[in-house]
Each structure stands twice: as structure tokens, then as C-alpha cells.
Length: 301
Image (cartoon, rainbow, N blue to C red; front, top):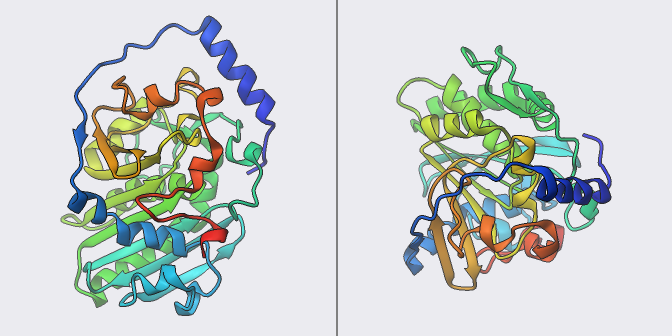
């Protein structure tokens, strides 16, 4: 996926503020999460963190591996632009599918705010019966397609050998975008009764409102966690036809975490869409965390 200039993104955001038709936003009440709810995310955050670390193939990647010591690596592969991993966690009784996308923080801000923003239809051979009205970022779609069939085969084999129906897709940044696509892909292709969910971190918008609605319908356990003023979750812009699905968890400040309602349309002051109304109000350093005390990226390995 080619990188683009941040200046283009700035220009597009300025144009949107000048010329775009205002979106209908809904003020709804957020839900403050308890300490127990926040701590329940930690195993998945550590899996997303581990995907960046050398040594994940044999689980010798330091603190991120030690945090989930009972897991078993089933599939590990890829390159520095797309590394996919499948794990089985006995303690969670779940198959974990994790992606790394870029070697953060060594990627530039322009890589992370990639504005190749063309929307395209999903491949009906990977998403059977999908409507052409459901559209996603074509670069994310093409990257996802490279590993989709290998992941599906591995997940099916693990479901049989481990006698589990639970599958969780995890990822950070662009890896989170791939995990979001994985969650829908697996929901469409795994046997009926499978329990597919996702936990993503600092994820950009992936598709249009029809795609977001499909995630809501088929992946009801979907959660995307945003840290403070991270600007990555607000790109590509909604004025370009993009929308997040439901499931935003916003870390407002350390220990203050809220669940935000709706599909990218709530304007509560504690939700990202209001906290970071444009990229000038964002802070790229928040992209690396900490996510409830856990930082993600190569420097966190």
C-alpha cells in the first residue's frame, strides 16, 4: 500500500470543513467502564503488542509474551508490511488472529495518515453474498486478501483440534484495520454458531456506513479502542464516505475509560469524534498508547 503526503490529508480536511454538508450527529450518554472491565482488555492488548516483537514465533518476545504465557503459536508469517499470526489461548478458550502492519514508531506520520482513500467493493469470493454497496478502503482490502485464505484454513483447523468456537481478531493501527476486515470475513466464512469478535487499537476508518452496519450485525462483540487524542482513528474523514462501526472504547485519560454509543455519530465530549475534531487537535504520540498501561510498537517490545 503506497504511502501519501500528510499535506494532502490536511488539505482534504480543510476542504471538508469549508464545503462538506454537515453530518447529523447524535448526543448520547457514554458509559464509564469499571476497573474490572478495563483490565479485561489487557490479554488482547498484549497479543496486539506481541505482533510487533521479534521472537513471537517461539514466544520469546519478552513482557508481551510473558503476559500471555499459556498460549500456543499456530501460524506466524508475513513481512514488515503485513505480519499475521494465529494463536490459541487455553485460558481464554479462544483462537487469536493478530496482525502487524507497520514497524511503529519507525513509520512516518504520513504513512499512518495514508490518504489513498478510494473505496471499493469487497471480493465476493472472500465475502460470499456481499452487496456491492458495502465498500472499504481498497488498499486495506487488497492487503487483507493476501492472507485471508491462509488464516481461514488455520482458524478452521484450530476450531476442530481445540474444540472451541471462539475467535478474536486483534490488531493495532493498520493492523487493526486488517483485523476489522478479518472479523467480518471470518463471520461470513466460519460455521454457524461460531463466536467471532474483535479488539482493535488506534484503528483508522475502514469502510463506508454500509460496511459499518454489517460489522454491527455480524460482529456484535466488535470493539475499537482509541487512546486520548490519537488522530489516526479520525482518518480517512467521514466526508470521504467513511464511518467506524459501533464499539468505540475511548481512553479519555489514565483510568478514565468510556464506551461510546453509535456508529461514529456521537458527539459526547468524551468520545473521539468530539475530542479530536480534526488532525490539528490530535497527538500522534497517543497512537502508541499506553492503552490502559500497555504501550504498543517496536519500542514496547
